[in-house]
Image (tube, rainbow, N blue to C red; front, side, top):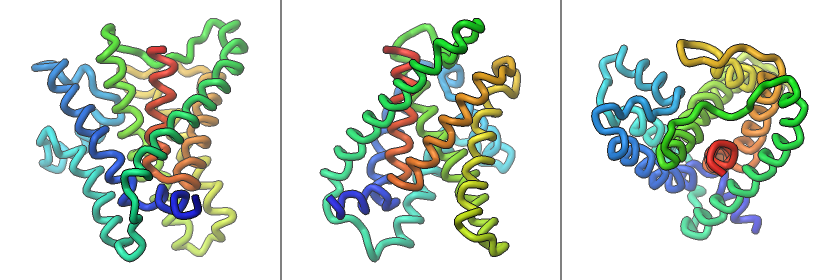
Amino acid sequence: MRDYLRATRHPWSSFLFLVPLVAVYEGGVVWLGGDRADRLRNGADAWVRWQLETFGAGHAFAAPMLVLGILLLWSWWRAADCPADPVRTWFGMAFEGAAYAAVLWQFGQNYGPIIDKLGVRLDVPAAPDRAARVLTYLGAGIYEEALFRLGLFGGLLLMLRLVLLPRLIALPLAAFVAACGFAAAHHVGPYGEPMNAYVFLFRVIAGLYFTALYVGRGFGVAVAAHAGYDILVGVA
């Protein structure tokens, strides 16, 4: 068990866990979306692609290659302690992700009645087809975690540590800022939802929850929990 708990936090385990998820998401978006595949993409995915296009990397596979490439490079850096049983680790991460998604979903069920009385819905805007919705939520798990946990939280934590801020202060500060950014991202842009303090607070809590999973259980588990939660809310 101790080896497994260590293995899930290794970037190689996250890389192996994400490869099939990215393949299903990217392949499904092209298959179901056809010429209008962009309408099925998650907002974070679309934003990453837009940023890559500004640097001349507009290829359809640039975004997934970036995410997987970062994990692969990180895995090479940590090659000395690479996990020995990737298959058991993969299935364990899937089970953990589903369990953590159910925990957040149950919390949302108890939080939901409060804001339902105010006429506010927590559901993510969804495509009409169920398979398309699952793909969109899978993309949210992959690219929102890559953007806000791997990128924003990880980058902030690194900068705060570089200026010699103690980890005890730097970690919660970076987690809070990244969670607020995660919550705010749902309310900006042409497809953003109207700002509502109750929904914003819930998403800040969810962002902190996913950050705790990222730090304590690894990137792959955070992705699985995020995608699983969105699917439970939007499809189940």
